[in-house]
Amino acid sequence: MARVKLHAEPREVLGKEVKLLRSEGILPAHLYGKNVPSVALQVEKLAAHKVLATAGSSQLVDLTIKGEKKPRNVLIREVQKGLGGKLLHLDFFQVSMTEAITVPVPLELMGESPDLKLKNLTLDQMVWEVQVKCLPDRIPQKIDVDISSLVDAGQTVFGKDVLLGEGVTLTSNPEEVIARVRMVTVRLEEEVAKPAAEEVKAEGEAAPAVEGAKEEK
Image (cartoon, rainbow, N blue to C red; front, side):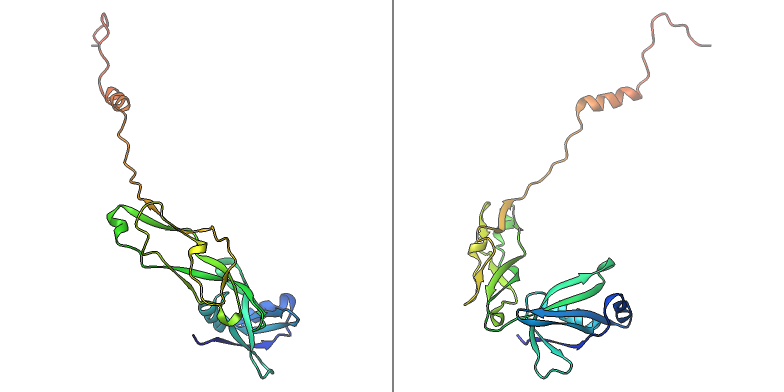
């Protein structure tokens, strides 16, 4: 998969004045890393949205900073949003290509068996991502979880069952439940209790005549 690319410029506008940048379609950002001097940056907001949609927080980004010859290898480490999900700020973390890092990777269930519906069973996914450790250039875009063998109630996929690529190690709890098969519970509407029905009926009936009562004229 081709590396996602993003262009940035050094940022001189700081503090509350960054509101003006946002109004002009510019997003304030920050770059930091191990043994890396922190740098205030700014990127085009539209480009930032595209990178987030493609790379998320687990894929490497080639960040080219104006005035520098080589792009930096970074991950998007923090995304700040305001009301309505409005994008406010990005933090980039520069990585070393020779040092393993821990990142979250999304899971995708594959191959659900058609026998589940025939047996009145359903599959619940409990976890949507796991943490893995690997070199930056080995980060999986996603991890496929084969569920085609799950055909009976109670069958479960644990974290330790997930197949990872070479050089990729699971750091999440290996006993964490990823997906589980269970019976579909059909909730039947309760019948109206007979005493309640009789009570409603009684309310609609005329009261019995009292012996000795005078007839109204």
